[in-house]
Amino acid sequence: QVRLVESGGGSVQPGGSLRLSCEASEYDVSSNCMAWFRRAPGKEREAVLAINEKNYGTFHAAFVQDRFSISRNNTKNIVYLQMNNLKPEDTAVYYCAARTGWCLNWDTPSRYNYWGQGTQVTVSS
Image 1 (cartoon, one colour):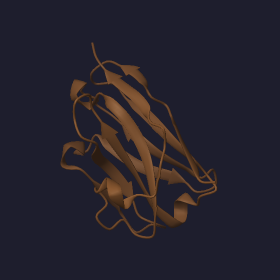
Image 2 (cartoon, one colour; image 1 turned 180 degrees about the vertical axis):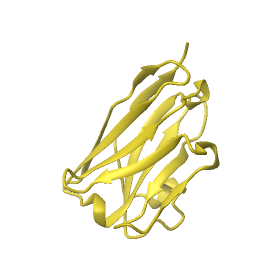
Image 3 (cartoon, one colour; image 1 turned 30 degrees about the vertical axis):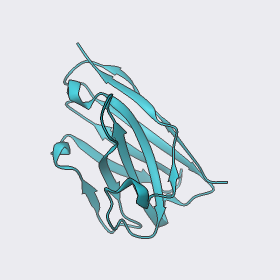
């Protein structure tokens, strides 16, 4: 049974950093599209970043700019979301998502087959 488990969320002050982890079970993160989404209070779920299978590139939302990055450890079967210079508007529940094959339409939630339970990120002074 495929399982995605996020961790690393928490509370941080503006300008701070967090690294989220998504550990996959029964699923090869290196050979599939892996993504991070988020849902802020009262808002729709939105795509943050995705990484294509093998080393075929990454995708990011405009608001990411150079603050966030996605990476993976194929040996540990974990995908990371590194977030720097966090802002209060980054406060949200962050979800890991997975789908087979390439990251076509990477920012469309319905394209993903598997989801984690989410981890809360709160940015506040």
